[in-house]
Length: 68
Image 1 (cartoon, rainbow, N blue to C red):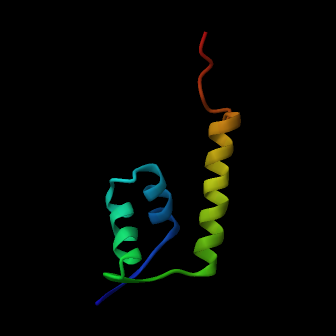
Image 2 (image 1 turned 45 degrees about the horizontal axis):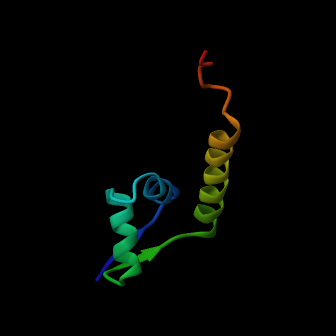
Image 3 (image 1 turned 90 degrees about the vertical axis):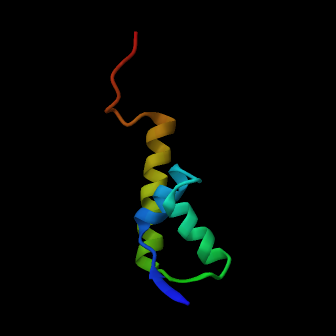
């Protein structure tokens, strides 16, 4: 069995593309075909970044150009 460390970027990329490589890695972990390690820091970082991205989408990040 292979062991992998999952970083927050894997979770975020998997959310953005359910058919991408990151989602596939998480699927393999879920199926028990990979043994995954994560840390509480990674979970906190992922939560912070996902909430920030969702807020940007819902309320606008201020970086988008105004459309007329």
